[in-house]
Length: 164
Length: 276
Ligand SMILES: Cc1cc2nc3c(=O)[nH]c(=O)nc-3n(C[C@H](O)[C@H](O)[C@H](O)COP(=O)(O)OP(=O)(O)OC[C@H]3O[C@@H](n4cnc5c(N)ncnc54)[C@H](O)[C@@H]3O)c2cc1C
Ligand code: FES
Ligand code: FES
Image (cartoon, rainbow over all chains, first blue to last red; front, side, top):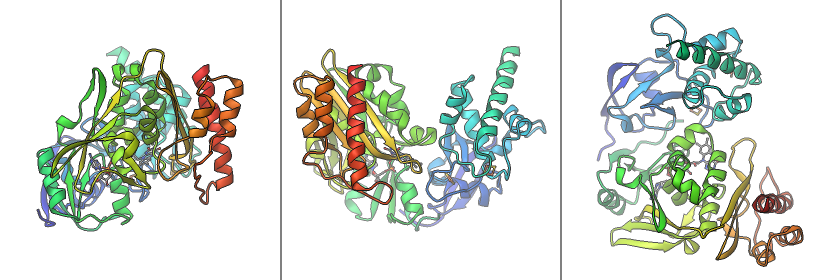
Protein backbone atom coordinates (compact mmCIF):
# COMPACT_ATOMS: atom_id res chain seq x y z
CA UNK A 1 0.00 0.00 0.00
CA UNK A 2 1.61 3.18 -1.16
CA UNK A 3 0.72 6.57 -2.59
CA UNK A 4 4.08 6.57 -4.40
CA UNK A 5 4.36 6.47 -8.15
CA UNK A 6 3.55 3.16 -9.76
CA UNK A 7 4.72 1.71 -13.03
CA UNK A 8 1.84 1.46 -15.50
CA UNK A 9 2.20 -0.37 -18.81
CA UNK A 10 -0.44 -0.78 -21.51
CA UNK A 11 -0.76 -1.01 -25.27
CA UNK A 12 -1.85 2.31 -26.75
CA UNK A 13 -2.65 2.44 -30.46
CA UNK A 14 -0.77 -0.80 -30.99
CA UNK A 15 2.41 0.30 -29.23
CA UNK A 16 3.60 -0.79 -25.74
CA UNK A 17 3.72 2.32 -23.59
CA UNK A 18 4.59 2.77 -19.94
CA UNK A 19 5.17 5.50 -17.38
CA UNK A 20 5.59 6.10 -13.68
CA UNK A 21 2.38 7.71 -12.44
CA UNK A 22 0.59 8.53 -9.22
CA UNK A 23 -2.38 6.24 -8.43
CA UNK A 24 -4.68 9.26 -8.85
CA UNK A 25 -3.66 9.72 -12.49
CA UNK A 26 -6.74 9.40 -14.66
CA UNK A 27 -6.39 7.52 -17.93
CA UNK A 28 -6.96 10.78 -19.82
CA UNK A 29 -4.03 12.43 -18.02
CA UNK A 30 -1.83 9.40 -18.66
CA UNK A 31 -2.65 9.68 -22.37
CA UNK A 32 -2.25 13.45 -22.61
CA UNK A 33 0.51 14.23 -20.12
CA UNK A 34 2.61 11.06 -19.94
CA UNK A 35 2.26 10.00 -23.58
CA UNK A 36 1.62 13.36 -25.29
CA UNK A 37 -1.53 12.07 -27.00
CA UNK A 38 -3.53 15.29 -26.75
CA UNK A 39 -6.27 14.32 -29.21
CA UNK A 40 -8.29 13.00 -26.26
CA UNK A 41 -9.87 16.03 -24.57
CA UNK A 42 -11.16 16.95 -21.12
CA UNK A 43 -14.39 18.93 -21.25
CA UNK A 44 -15.89 18.56 -17.77
CA UNK A 45 -15.38 17.53 -14.15
CA UNK A 46 -18.46 15.36 -13.90
CA UNK A 47 -17.98 12.50 -16.39
CA UNK A 48 -20.80 13.84 -18.53
CA UNK A 49 -19.38 15.45 -21.67
CA UNK A 50 -17.68 12.57 -23.51
CA UNK A 51 -14.83 14.67 -24.95
CA UNK A 52 -12.47 12.07 -23.44
CA UNK A 53 -13.95 8.90 -24.97
CA UNK A 54 -11.47 6.21 -26.02
CA UNK A 55 -11.73 2.46 -26.58
CA UNK A 56 -10.45 0.23 -23.75
CA UNK A 57 -10.34 -3.49 -24.60
CA UNK A 58 -13.29 -3.04 -26.96
CA UNK A 59 -15.37 -1.01 -24.49
CA UNK A 60 -16.17 2.63 -25.28
CA UNK A 61 -14.89 4.39 -22.17
CA UNK A 62 -14.74 7.88 -20.67
CA UNK A 63 -11.02 8.10 -20.01
CA UNK A 64 -11.63 10.69 -17.27
CA UNK A 65 -13.46 8.08 -15.19
CA UNK A 66 -10.84 5.35 -14.86
CA UNK A 67 -7.42 5.48 -13.28
CA UNK A 68 -4.40 4.51 -15.37
CA UNK A 69 -3.39 2.17 -12.53
CA UNK A 70 -6.50 0.07 -13.24
CA UNK A 71 -5.42 -0.57 -16.80
CA UNK A 72 -2.20 -2.58 -16.51
CA UNK A 73 -1.92 -4.61 -19.70
CA UNK A 74 -5.00 -3.08 -21.32
CA UNK A 75 -5.38 -2.32 -25.00
CA UNK A 76 -6.34 1.30 -25.57
CA UNK A 77 -7.25 2.98 -28.86
CA UNK A 78 -7.44 6.77 -29.13
CA UNK A 79 -8.45 9.15 -31.90
CA UNK A 80 -4.79 9.33 -33.02
CA UNK A 81 -4.94 5.73 -34.31
CA UNK A 82 -7.75 6.32 -36.78
CA UNK A 83 -5.81 7.95 -39.59
CA UNK A 84 -2.42 6.57 -38.66
CA UNK A 85 -1.64 5.68 -42.28
CA UNK A 86 -2.66 9.14 -43.51
CA UNK A 87 -6.09 8.09 -44.80
CA UNK A 88 -9.06 9.39 -42.85
CA UNK A 89 -11.30 6.83 -41.16
CA UNK A 90 -14.80 6.88 -42.75
CA UNK A 91 -16.12 8.46 -39.56
CA UNK A 92 -13.59 11.29 -39.80
CA UNK A 93 -14.47 11.59 -43.49
CA UNK A 94 -18.16 11.82 -42.52
CA UNK A 95 -17.54 14.65 -40.03
CA UNK A 96 -15.54 16.48 -42.70
CA UNK A 97 -18.05 15.95 -45.51
CA UNK A 98 -21.11 16.88 -43.43
CA UNK A 99 -19.46 19.68 -41.48
CA UNK A 100 -20.10 17.84 -38.20
CA UNK A 101 -18.07 20.31 -36.14
CA UNK A 102 -17.42 23.94 -35.49
CA UNK A 103 -14.77 24.45 -32.78
CA UNK A 104 -13.88 20.75 -32.88
CA UNK A 105 -13.44 20.32 -29.14
CA UNK A 106 -16.04 17.57 -28.82
CA UNK A 107 -15.09 15.90 -32.10
CA UNK A 108 -12.57 13.25 -30.96
CA UNK A 109 -15.04 11.94 -28.38
CA UNK A 110 -17.94 12.15 -30.84
CA UNK A 111 -15.98 10.13 -33.38
CA UNK A 112 -14.84 7.48 -30.88
CA UNK A 113 -18.39 7.08 -29.49
CA UNK A 114 -19.91 6.96 -32.97
CA UNK A 115 -17.55 4.21 -34.09
CA UNK A 116 -18.48 2.20 -30.98
CA UNK A 117 -22.18 2.74 -31.72
CA UNK A 118 -21.85 1.50 -35.31
CA UNK A 119 -20.14 -1.67 -34.11
CA UNK A 120 -23.40 -2.58 -32.35
CA UNK A 121 -25.76 -1.05 -34.86
CA UNK A 122 -24.31 -0.52 -38.35
CA UNK A 123 -27.50 1.08 -39.71
CA UNK A 124 -28.92 3.37 -37.02
CA UNK A 125 -31.92 5.66 -37.44
CA UNK A 126 -31.44 9.35 -36.61
CA UNK A 127 -33.11 8.76 -33.25
CA UNK A 128 -30.76 5.87 -32.51
CA UNK A 129 -27.77 8.06 -33.42
CA UNK A 130 -28.96 10.74 -30.99
CA UNK A 131 -29.51 8.13 -28.26
CA UNK A 132 -26.14 6.56 -28.96
CA UNK A 133 -24.45 9.93 -28.47
CA UNK A 134 -26.26 10.72 -25.19
CA UNK A 135 -22.94 10.76 -23.39
CA UNK A 136 -21.32 13.30 -25.75
CA UNK A 137 -22.02 17.00 -25.47
CA UNK A 138 -21.45 19.55 -28.23
CA UNK A 139 -21.68 23.23 -27.44
CA UNK A 140 -21.48 24.47 -31.03
CA UNK A 141 -23.26 22.52 -33.72
CA UNK A 142 -26.75 21.90 -32.37
CA UNK A 143 -26.06 18.22 -33.19
CA UNK A 144 -27.89 18.06 -36.54
CA UNK A 145 -24.71 17.97 -38.62
CA UNK A 146 -23.22 15.43 -36.24
CA UNK A 147 -26.20 13.15 -36.87
CA UNK A 148 -25.74 13.71 -40.61
CA UNK A 149 -22.03 12.89 -40.30
CA UNK A 150 -22.66 9.61 -38.49
CA UNK A 151 -25.35 8.63 -41.01
CA UNK A 152 -22.94 9.44 -43.86
CA UNK A 153 -20.17 7.37 -42.25
CA UNK A 154 -22.52 4.47 -41.50
CA UNK A 155 -23.51 4.23 -45.17
CA UNK A 156 -19.86 4.34 -46.25
CA UNK A 157 -18.83 1.71 -43.70
CA UNK A 158 -21.67 -0.63 -44.71
CA UNK A 159 -20.58 -0.33 -48.33
CA UNK A 160 -16.94 -1.06 -47.44
CA UNK A 161 -18.01 -4.10 -45.40
CA UNK A 162 -20.19 -5.53 -48.16
CA UNK A 163 -17.33 -5.04 -50.63
CA UNK A 164 -14.95 -7.05 -48.36
CA UNK B 1 -10.61 17.51 -11.76
CA UNK B 2 -7.62 15.91 -10.04
CA UNK B 3 -8.53 13.75 -7.03
CA UNK B 4 -6.77 13.93 -3.69
CA UNK B 5 -3.81 11.55 -3.41
CA UNK B 6 -4.63 7.98 -2.41
CA UNK B 7 -3.04 4.58 -2.46
CA UNK B 8 -4.27 1.90 -4.84
CA UNK B 9 -4.73 -1.81 -4.25
CA UNK B 10 -6.12 -4.34 -6.69
CA UNK B 11 -8.17 -6.85 -4.68
CA UNK B 12 -7.28 -10.51 -5.19
CA UNK B 13 -10.41 -11.94 -3.59
CA UNK B 14 -13.53 -10.92 -1.69
CA UNK B 15 -11.69 -11.81 1.54
CA UNK B 16 -8.76 -9.58 0.58
CA UNK B 17 -11.08 -6.64 -0.24
CA UNK B 18 -13.04 -7.03 3.01
CA UNK B 19 -9.84 -7.26 5.07
CA UNK B 20 -8.65 -4.02 3.47
CA UNK B 21 -11.82 -2.02 4.16
CA UNK B 22 -12.05 -3.48 7.66
CA UNK B 23 -8.42 -2.53 8.33
CA UNK B 24 -8.61 1.05 7.07
CA UNK B 25 -11.58 3.39 7.67
CA UNK B 26 -10.22 5.64 4.90
CA UNK B 27 -10.46 2.88 2.30
CA UNK B 28 -13.21 2.60 -0.30
CA UNK B 29 -14.12 -0.07 -2.80
CA UNK B 30 -13.87 0.88 -6.47
CA UNK B 31 -16.30 -0.92 -8.80
CA UNK B 32 -17.44 0.71 -12.07
CA UNK B 33 -16.25 4.03 -10.67
CA UNK B 34 -19.03 6.03 -12.32
CA UNK B 35 -20.29 7.45 -9.04
CA UNK B 36 -17.09 7.37 -7.02
CA UNK B 37 -14.61 8.79 -9.55
CA UNK B 38 -16.71 11.87 -10.47
CA UNK B 39 -17.14 12.52 -6.72
CA UNK B 40 -13.36 12.20 -6.24
CA UNK B 41 -12.65 14.56 -9.13
CA UNK B 42 -14.91 17.16 -7.50
CA UNK B 43 -13.24 16.32 -4.16
CA UNK B 44 -16.63 15.52 -2.66
CA UNK B 45 -15.01 12.18 -1.82
CA UNK B 46 -11.38 11.79 -0.78
CA UNK B 47 -10.71 8.17 0.20
CA UNK B 48 -7.17 7.51 1.38
CA UNK B 49 -7.08 4.10 -0.25
CA UNK B 50 -8.92 2.59 -3.20
CA UNK B 51 -9.54 -1.13 -3.31
CA UNK B 52 -10.19 -1.98 -6.95
CA UNK B 53 -12.60 -4.94 -7.07
CA UNK B 54 -13.12 -4.94 -10.84
CA UNK B 55 -10.84 -7.95 -11.28
CA UNK B 56 -13.00 -10.24 -9.13
CA UNK B 57 -14.57 -12.24 -11.97
CA UNK B 58 -16.55 -14.42 -9.53
CA UNK B 59 -18.74 -11.38 -8.79
CA UNK B 60 -19.75 -10.86 -12.43
CA UNK B 61 -22.03 -13.87 -12.84
CA UNK B 62 -25.77 -13.74 -13.42
CA UNK B 63 -27.62 -17.02 -12.74
CA UNK B 64 -31.24 -17.78 -13.42
CA UNK B 65 -32.63 -20.77 -11.50
CA UNK B 66 -35.28 -20.96 -8.78
CA UNK B 67 -34.40 -17.35 -8.16
CA UNK B 68 -32.28 -14.87 -10.06
CA UNK B 69 -28.87 -14.03 -8.68
CA UNK B 70 -27.01 -10.99 -9.99
CA UNK B 71 -23.34 -10.62 -9.02
CA UNK B 72 -22.28 -7.26 -7.61
CA UNK B 73 -19.98 -6.57 -10.55
CA UNK B 74 -22.49 -7.33 -13.32
CA UNK B 75 -22.69 -4.14 -15.36
CA UNK B 76 -25.87 -2.52 -16.61
CA UNK B 77 -25.08 -3.91 -20.06
CA UNK B 78 -24.42 -7.43 -18.68
CA UNK B 79 -27.95 -7.38 -17.23
CA UNK B 80 -29.59 -5.82 -20.28
CA UNK B 81 -27.99 -8.34 -22.64
CA UNK B 82 -28.86 -11.40 -20.49
CA UNK B 83 -31.87 -12.64 -22.46
CA UNK B 84 -33.06 -15.17 -19.89
CA UNK B 85 -32.99 -12.60 -17.10
CA UNK B 86 -34.81 -10.00 -19.21
CA UNK B 87 -37.43 -12.61 -20.18
CA UNK B 88 -38.26 -13.10 -16.46
CA UNK B 89 -37.66 -9.53 -15.32
CA UNK B 90 -38.50 -7.24 -18.27
CA UNK B 91 -38.48 -4.27 -15.87
CA UNK B 92 -34.67 -4.21 -16.25
CA UNK B 93 -35.18 -3.88 -20.00
CA UNK B 94 -37.52 -0.95 -19.36
CA UNK B 95 -35.20 0.81 -16.92
CA UNK B 96 -31.59 0.24 -18.02
CA UNK B 97 -31.72 2.07 -21.38
CA UNK B 98 -32.60 5.19 -19.36
CA UNK B 99 -29.58 4.96 -17.04
CA UNK B 100 -26.87 7.47 -17.98
CA UNK B 101 -25.32 6.91 -21.40
CA UNK B 102 -23.60 4.09 -23.30
CA UNK B 103 -20.28 4.55 -21.46
CA UNK B 104 -21.98 4.63 -18.04
CA UNK B 105 -23.96 1.47 -18.82
CA UNK B 106 -20.82 -0.33 -19.97
CA UNK B 107 -18.90 0.34 -16.72
CA UNK B 108 -21.44 1.00 -13.96
CA UNK B 109 -22.26 -2.07 -11.87
CA UNK B 110 -25.48 -3.24 -10.24
CA UNK B 111 -23.65 -3.69 -6.93
CA UNK B 112 -22.18 -0.18 -7.14
CA UNK B 113 -25.61 1.31 -7.80
CA UNK B 114 -27.25 -0.59 -4.93
CA UNK B 115 -24.37 0.08 -2.52
CA UNK B 116 -24.15 3.78 -3.39
CA UNK B 117 -27.96 4.24 -3.00
CA UNK B 118 -28.06 7.55 -4.82
CA UNK B 119 -31.52 9.05 -4.17
CA UNK B 120 -31.93 9.65 -7.93
CA UNK B 121 -30.67 6.24 -9.11
CA UNK B 122 -33.01 4.08 -11.18
CA UNK B 123 -32.41 0.44 -10.23
CA UNK B 124 -32.88 1.09 -6.52
CA UNK B 125 -36.64 1.51 -7.03
CA UNK B 126 -36.66 -1.46 -9.42
CA UNK B 127 -35.05 -3.68 -6.77
CA UNK B 128 -37.43 -2.52 -4.04
CA UNK B 129 -40.42 -3.35 -6.27
CA UNK B 130 -39.05 -6.80 -7.14
CA UNK B 131 -37.99 -7.70 -3.57
CA UNK B 132 -35.47 -10.34 -2.58
CA UNK B 133 -32.28 -9.95 -0.60
CA UNK B 134 -28.80 -8.50 -0.74
CA UNK B 135 -25.83 -10.72 0.13
CA UNK B 136 -22.94 -9.07 1.92
CA UNK B 137 -19.57 -10.21 3.26
CA UNK B 138 -17.86 -8.58 6.23
CA UNK B 139 -15.09 -9.48 8.67
CA UNK B 140 -17.58 -11.68 10.59
CA UNK B 141 -18.62 -13.58 7.46
CA UNK B 142 -21.60 -13.51 5.16
CA UNK B 143 -25.12 -12.32 5.81
CA UNK B 144 -28.22 -11.71 3.81
CA UNK B 145 -30.29 -8.53 4.13
CA UNK B 146 -33.94 -8.45 2.98
CA UNK B 147 -34.45 -5.73 0.39
CA UNK B 148 -37.26 -4.27 2.53
CA UNK B 149 -34.71 -3.50 5.26
CA UNK B 150 -31.83 -2.56 3.01
CA UNK B 151 -32.37 1.09 1.96
CA UNK B 152 -32.00 3.39 4.98
CA UNK B 153 -31.63 7.01 3.84
CA UNK B 154 -29.87 9.27 1.34
CA UNK B 155 -26.75 7.34 0.22
CA UNK B 156 -27.22 5.11 3.26
CA UNK B 157 -27.94 1.40 3.35
CA UNK B 158 -27.91 -1.42 5.87
CA UNK B 159 -24.39 -2.33 4.73
CA UNK B 160 -21.78 -1.68 7.44
CA UNK B 161 -18.74 0.37 6.37
CA UNK B 162 -16.60 -2.78 6.42
CA UNK B 163 -19.09 -4.90 4.47
CA UNK B 164 -19.03 -5.61 0.78
CA UNK B 165 -22.09 -6.33 -1.32
CA UNK B 166 -21.43 -9.56 -3.23
CA UNK B 167 -24.73 -10.31 -4.97
CA UNK B 168 -28.44 -9.59 -5.10
CA UNK B 169 -31.03 -12.38 -5.19
CA UNK B 170 -34.45 -11.69 -6.69
CA UNK B 171 -37.32 -14.21 -6.54
CA UNK B 172 -38.71 -15.44 -9.86
CA UNK B 173 -41.98 -13.65 -10.48
CA UNK B 174 -45.08 -15.82 -10.91
CA UNK B 175 -46.71 -16.58 -14.26
CA UNK B 176 -48.48 -13.60 -15.75
CA UNK B 177 -46.44 -11.08 -13.78
CA UNK B 178 -46.42 -7.60 -15.30
CA UNK B 179 -43.86 -4.92 -14.59
CA UNK B 180 -42.52 -1.64 -15.87
CA UNK B 181 -40.42 1.39 -15.00
CA UNK B 182 -41.02 4.97 -16.12
CA UNK B 183 -38.78 7.94 -15.54
CA UNK B 184 -38.80 11.69 -15.86
CA UNK B 185 -35.14 12.50 -16.47
CA UNK B 186 -33.39 15.58 -15.26
CA UNK B 187 -32.60 17.33 -18.55
CA UNK B 188 -28.99 18.09 -17.59
CA UNK B 189 -27.86 15.19 -15.40
CA UNK B 190 -30.08 12.47 -16.87
CA UNK B 191 -30.80 11.14 -13.37
CA UNK B 192 -34.39 10.55 -12.22
CA UNK B 193 -36.41 13.58 -11.15
CA UNK B 194 -39.10 10.98 -10.56
CA UNK B 195 -38.85 7.28 -11.37
CA UNK B 196 -41.71 4.84 -10.75
CA UNK B 197 -41.39 1.04 -10.78
CA UNK B 198 -44.46 -1.18 -10.84
CA UNK B 199 -44.55 -4.97 -10.38
CA UNK B 200 -47.85 -6.85 -10.31
CA UNK B 201 -47.89 -10.59 -9.53
CA UNK B 202 -49.44 -13.17 -7.16
CA UNK B 203 -48.00 -11.30 -4.19
CA UNK B 204 -50.04 -8.19 -4.97
CA UNK B 205 -49.04 -4.93 -6.61
CA UNK B 206 -45.87 -3.03 -5.74
CA UNK B 207 -45.43 0.60 -6.72
CA UNK B 208 -42.11 2.19 -5.76
CA UNK B 209 -40.54 5.58 -6.24
CA UNK B 210 -37.04 7.03 -6.69
CA UNK B 211 -35.72 10.51 -7.45
CA UNK B 212 -38.23 12.48 -5.39
CA UNK B 213 -37.62 10.79 -2.04
CA UNK B 214 -34.51 10.34 0.11
CA UNK B 215 -34.47 6.60 -0.56
CA UNK B 216 -36.58 4.30 -2.72
CA UNK B 217 -39.95 3.80 -1.07
CA UNK B 218 -43.26 2.04 -1.57
CA UNK B 219 -46.19 4.25 -2.58
CA UNK B 220 -48.59 2.50 -0.22
CA UNK B 221 -51.57 4.65 -1.23
CA UNK B 222 -51.17 3.73 -4.89
CA UNK B 223 -50.57 0.06 -4.04
CA UNK B 224 -53.76 -0.03 -1.97
CA UNK B 225 -55.76 1.74 -4.69
CA UNK B 226 -54.98 -0.95 -7.27
CA UNK B 227 -55.07 -3.95 -4.93
CA UNK B 228 -58.41 -5.15 -6.35
CA UNK B 229 -57.44 -4.61 -9.98
CA UNK B 230 -56.11 -2.02 -12.40
CA UNK B 231 -58.70 -0.11 -14.41
CA UNK B 232 -59.39 3.52 -15.27
CA UNK B 233 -61.11 4.18 -11.94
CA UNK B 234 -58.43 2.53 -9.79
CA UNK B 235 -55.67 4.30 -11.78
CA UNK B 236 -57.33 7.65 -11.01
CA UNK B 237 -57.52 6.70 -7.34
CA UNK B 238 -53.86 5.60 -7.37
CA UNK B 239 -52.87 8.98 -8.84
CA UNK B 240 -54.88 10.81 -6.19
CA UNK B 241 -53.35 8.75 -3.38
CA UNK B 242 -49.84 8.45 -4.87
CA UNK B 243 -47.92 10.52 -2.32
CA UNK B 244 -49.99 9.52 0.72
CA UNK B 245 -47.67 9.26 3.72
CA UNK B 246 -44.55 9.90 1.61
CA UNK B 247 -42.30 12.92 1.96
CA UNK B 248 -41.53 14.40 -1.47
CA UNK B 249 -38.29 16.40 -1.68
CA UNK B 250 -37.98 19.58 -3.71
CA UNK B 251 -34.89 21.26 -5.11
CA UNK B 252 -33.99 24.23 -7.31
CA UNK B 253 -34.92 22.37 -10.47
CA UNK B 254 -38.20 20.85 -9.33
CA UNK B 255 -39.97 22.09 -6.21
CA UNK B 256 -42.11 19.92 -3.96
CA UNK B 257 -45.43 20.92 -5.52
CA UNK B 258 -44.26 20.23 -9.08
CA UNK B 259 -42.63 16.97 -8.11
CA UNK B 260 -45.75 15.84 -6.25
CA UNK B 261 -47.74 16.46 -9.42
CA UNK B 262 -45.12 14.63 -11.47
CA UNK B 263 -45.30 11.58 -9.17
CA UNK B 264 -49.02 11.25 -9.91
CA UNK B 265 -48.43 11.58 -13.66
CA UNK B 266 -45.63 9.01 -13.64
CA UNK B 267 -47.78 6.58 -11.62
CA UNK B 268 -50.54 7.02 -14.20
CA UNK B 269 -48.15 6.43 -17.10
CA UNK B 270 -46.69 3.31 -15.47
CA UNK B 271 -50.08 1.79 -14.63
CA UNK B 272 -51.40 2.49 -18.13
CA UNK B 273 -48.39 0.64 -19.51
CA UNK B 274 -49.14 -2.28 -17.20
CA UNK B 275 -52.73 -2.69 -18.50
CA UNK B 276 -52.01 -1.96 -22.17
C1 LIG C 1 -22.69 10.88 -16.64
C2 LIG C 1 -23.35 9.93 -15.68
C3 LIG C 1 -24.72 9.75 -15.73
C4 LIG C 1 -25.35 8.85 -14.86
N1 LIG C 1 -26.70 8.71 -14.95
C5 LIG C 1 -27.33 7.84 -14.12
C6 LIG C 1 -28.73 7.64 -14.22
O1 LIG C 1 -29.42 8.21 -15.07
N2 LIG C 1 -29.30 6.75 -13.36
C7 LIG C 1 -28.57 6.06 -12.44
O2 LIG C 1 -29.13 5.26 -11.69
N3 LIG C 1 -27.24 6.24 -12.33
C8 LIG C 1 -26.60 7.10 -13.15
N4 LIG C 1 -25.25 7.27 -13.04
C9 LIG C 1 -24.50 6.54 -11.97
C10 LIG C 1 -24.07 5.18 -12.45
O3 LIG C 1 -25.19 4.37 -12.62
C11 LIG C 1 -23.06 4.53 -11.47
O4 LIG C 1 -22.23 3.76 -12.26
C12 LIG C 1 -23.62 3.64 -10.40
O5 LIG C 1 -24.58 4.30 -9.64
C13 LIG C 1 -22.56 3.21 -9.42
O6 LIG C 1 -22.00 2.03 -9.84
P1 LIG C 1 -20.41 1.87 -10.01
O7 LIG C 1 -20.15 0.45 -10.27
O8 LIG C 1 -19.94 2.85 -11.00
O9 LIG C 1 -19.93 2.23 -8.53
P2 LIG C 1 -18.64 3.00 -7.97
O10 LIG C 1 -18.65 4.39 -8.45
O11 LIG C 1 -17.42 2.19 -8.21
O12 LIG C 1 -18.97 2.96 -6.42
C14 LIG C 1 -20.01 3.74 -5.86
C15 LIG C 1 -19.99 3.58 -4.33
O13 LIG C 1 -20.40 2.27 -3.96
C16 LIG C 1 -19.36 1.58 -3.27
N5 LIG C 1 -19.35 0.21 -3.79
C17 LIG C 1 -19.21 -0.17 -5.09
N6 LIG C 1 -19.33 -1.52 -5.20
C18 LIG C 1 -19.54 -1.99 -3.93
C19 LIG C 1 -19.76 -3.28 -3.40
N7 LIG C 1 -19.78 -4.38 -4.17
N8 LIG C 1 -19.96 -3.40 -2.06
C20 LIG C 1 -19.97 -2.31 -1.25
N9 LIG C 1 -19.77 -1.05 -1.71
C21 LIG C 1 -19.57 -0.89 -3.04
C22 LIG C 1 -18.08 2.34 -3.57
O14 LIG C 1 -17.15 2.21 -2.52
C23 LIG C 1 -18.60 3.76 -3.71
O15 LIG C 1 -18.75 4.35 -2.47
C24 LIG C 1 -24.58 8.14 -13.90
C25 LIG C 1 -23.21 8.31 -13.84
C26 LIG C 1 -22.58 9.20 -14.72
C27 LIG C 1 -21.08 9.36 -14.65
S1 FES D 1 -13.98 14.86 -19.66
FE1 FES D 1 -14.66 12.83 -19.56
S2 FES D 1 -16.78 13.05 -19.68
FE2 FES D 1 -16.12 15.12 -19.68
S1 FES E 1 -17.89 21.52 -32.26
FE1 FES E 1 -17.55 22.82 -30.61
S2 FES E 1 -18.21 21.57 -28.93
FE2 FES E 1 -18.82 20.43 -30.63
